[in-house]
Image (cartoon, rainbow, N blue to C red; front, side, top):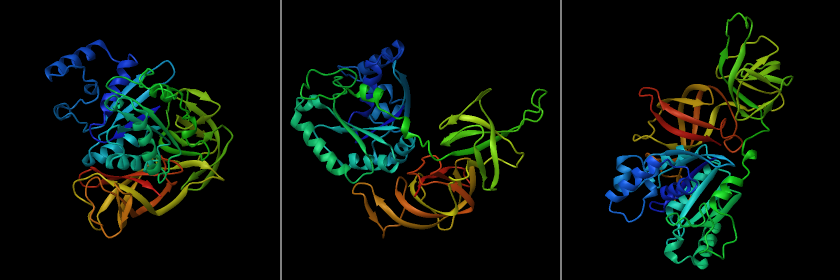
Length: 410
């Protein structure tokens, strides 16, 4: 399971992750000793668990998260990848980067302050990125004396706001990351809360259906020709399955050429398998010798992606300089690459109120807007809502090779 943290500055995101790692015994002794020494130097009377993820010097000095920090840990039930993302508005692009592959978003809310602008912003971004599950952690319950009224008030506030979002699974947990209440172990200080702890929710949440196992999509990354004694005539197409289930004997069509064939065999590294599904990386061989190369897509004949050169995209701008009029960018989508221009900016989104600003076309770094993009060759795509892999793009500056934007195809 991949999960990300989101919320306002100082809501305790890094402390919560530190607490999860600490209480689940996922920290080495030397790391603990280093954190103890740093906490003493800072004059703290407790061990600052946020230091586990705040690795940059500026982060430790300011007590904030700037870059995305990835941490890995495992329990007997499940492996986890955590993306600790920043809360500041000027690091929205970093938050989008960390959250783009997440199954779950932990939205932290300070029990004293309730739902604030940053809560709305990050919840909207989580909804925009089609993260299927949200866990709202009402943190710092120790500062409101663990009162049920404070928790219930925030649940009501957030539920009213979340009715505008496209997220079906939202859960609420009262916690104290600093004290460890309801994070890994149940707290006796909240007898009125009958739900599970945060770790139990993360361990037992069903995420198998988050992958699209209906629409078969296999984007070819490379062609494998060993030219060895044992495999004279072997021709395999390697890549990652980004949707659906494939089996030998399946009738397929190769796009954009339109050639028809059947799957002869599927290899998972060096062993042949009877079926493969997303997100496995495999090699597929076909019964017919047809021209297939990087950027092509192997799909079912009766279930094909959209093909087109005009796409509507929700874009997060990631560069200091805004979009230049009629400037050419390199667009990358699955294993495909082409030149593109931003034809038209439809509107900018006020990510505090979710309002559309149709008159404001002045795009700055971290702005989110809807754009019409023209591509020099047809792309094979689905809407981001249908498939997060075939529905995502990045724009790259063709001169500096910097990534200037990330987008979700509508």
